[in-house]
Image (cartoon, rainbow, N blue to C red):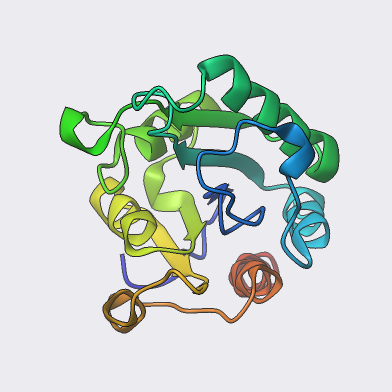
Length: 183
């Protein structure tokens, strides 16, 4: 999908590097720190009446570095800091599992959309790496890349929409949603 749909009904977020600072294999809720503007950005999505979801690869579970309970505790902390999300999708598999849920596969996006009763064509996925963009594309959703220090140059070049910050990405989504409501 090449643009933000004018019919956007939901915004899905990657967790690490997008909503919160990336702490590799984090199992400690005390280490969760939202990125600048995250609370404001997510609140703006909710205020616009759009559904929210988090879709996150957590291969540390498969690798035995963190437990599912630890990942869930970190997710609970994210919600305590940013407010509740309408859906959570966590892929516990490692890269060699070749599962349908691990980004860049579309499984988590498709499943979250089904849970929320929206078409993937009405979803915008916001993430910080190419796998987030590729998963959205494979699911038929739009995507916005918000590069960080770990984002590769080729991922930025391949992304159809790039925003400097999470707040900027959300502003793009809300502008598209407003354009429809003003018609």
